Length: 158
Image (cartoon, rainbow, N blue to C red):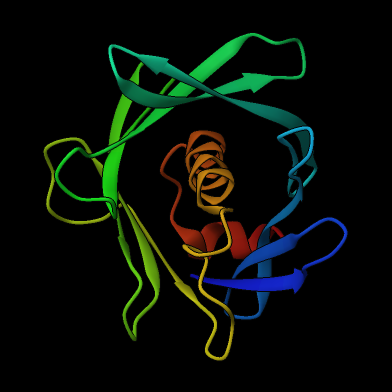
């Protein structure tokens, strides 16, 4: 999978694609901390909220009705890793901002990623732009909707 920046201003937009087929379209409104996700026929609006719990910064995912769906917390020892909880399922993630520029999403306790997305060559870093939480929650939402279906079967439906 690859991530491509479509637009930077006024509302940053991204597409996640595989074999030139768009799987996820993401549009971010950083002022309201809202983002729109389109996956096939499923279109949703989500919000994120930052809070501090016991000196730990936690980012919470809320649906359009302000109901909490999940949370994200960065690792204390590594800024490029952390944990995501979504609808009771635990994930971990790692970010590589070196030449590979990729996001890896893992089921908790596993060493093989369940999703791996590379930033398209020539694109700006997703880490320095402050959009990483939106991208991580979007990838988890994609995984939730597809419930582990192989990517090639999803491409056939598009």
